Image (cartoon, rainbow, N blue to C red):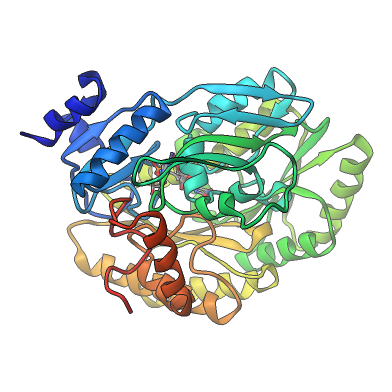
Length: 455
Ligand SMILES: Cc1cc2nc3c(=O)[nH]c(=O)nc-3n(C[C@H](O)[C@H](O)[C@H](O)COP(=O)(O)OP(=O)(O)OC[C@H]3O[C@@H](n4cnc5c(N)ncnc54)[C@H](O)[C@@H]3O)c2cc1C
């Protein structure tokens, strides 16, 4: 019998698919990593159904790869060993919103935009915003962050409690809806960032926030990238309370203007948001103006439509670059350094891009010291991928030598396994121990995060 037939015995047959298009849709992400099909796709609608699939898969030693919106960028959702792609898209209910507690409880397939639409009715927001409309389950599983992390923190700062189905089908609940807790080891944080390798998240209790009363978005253009980076560091160092502090280079802005029909200056720029009380914002705006001393343009927007257009443009940078390079594949670096090192780090990255003769653009969550070089690669030219990989390695090495990390937000997936070894080689036996305890038969997203051979 086929895997789909066997699964149809475990679940309602309507929850299982193995047609060509379902397999292809669950074979790839948006990155350069080569696709690989699962043998079947399952669409559970309850925690109990997830548990039944996992108990079956564990007994039969079949790999299971949780699948959210597949917007991750390091091959995370690619079922490299075949098996089951577990699509959580139908677990998409917002279970509760508690304005008085500033919490919300959701199923893992709820997307961040859907959650924000619901929260907006109560004057609330969920600020973690990877550019794509990712699922909350996928965002927790990658410890995602985004433009507002400089102010609010990333996913780990927002997940209060989880329901998780473990490999054998057991269901556990970690954390609580209280704002803080000292109750034992922090297993919630362990599952956040575990990339589907330790269990399947089936419910999340999240911290949410009020929408600030006043906000102003600023676009600041600079004569060069270095001046923009220095201004970002100065703004952080001066304690200006930026809600967002983003860096875009001239080439990125060119692609954005072409894709979104905007007319932003095509010069290295900071996109900044300040928010809070009227008086606080006015003070921060003045401070930002003084700190951006080399700026060639300083444009403040209070109008909500202009502000959301600006942030949508920022969120669509990757799509803009993809649209500008038809037929090419995308590779993005993602290191994070202590913020004072950002100007040197970006200078080093730019010099390496030129040395390798590549075309790459630089964008950064500058306030966090997290920057990306985005490459659009010609799949017909393997030397391009090789040079981009060499450059990725050089950028990671530089970050590690300066107190940074090989991934600020995208995670390890397939693409960063060697770098995890380089960054935390001494911790790999411990990490393997955790994996063996929670997933003794190694069915959960095999081939991701940990190197396949013990070091
Ligand atoms: C245009 C664009 C911009 C982006 N910008 C950012 C950014 O600014 N910051 C950032 O952090 N990321 C960014 N990303 C990457 C991506 O959006 C994030 O990694 C996001 O968190 C992935 O969520 P997803 O729902 O697509 O998860 P998927 O890609 O479907 O899955 C990601 C990983 O989580 C696992 N997983 C999914 N759901 C569950 C679950 N319920 N339980 C257990 N494991 C699960 C999967 O197995 C996989 O390993 C961007 C991507 C794009 C396309």
